[in-house]
Image (cartoon, rainbow, N blue to C red; front, top):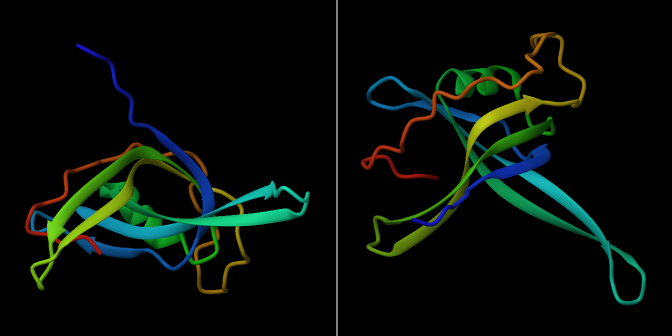
Length: 140
């Protein structure tokens, strides 16, 4: 039996506010994307910036915390596993998705909060209540 490893660690900024939904069984699930920036020099020595947009899914209590405290532009660290799946859309076409299923989300520095937003957010990783994606649920 060979060993395998599926682990992803990313730091980036949210591209939009998280979208919170619940499974028919009542499990919270939140989805959002982060922008991960990479700077490098090209052959001429000019600095280039590359941005990768990564879809993230978070389950359970941690998903509810993300929905309550995260907003577009907020910097976060995500640890999880890469998930690649495919499904048939309404047009009968096969669609392939790639996303990171988070096991830990750490809230980092971010933009100033509006007056009506909470002033305290958890800074430490929260254990995941990870659940499998129900077959009847179509990813975004």
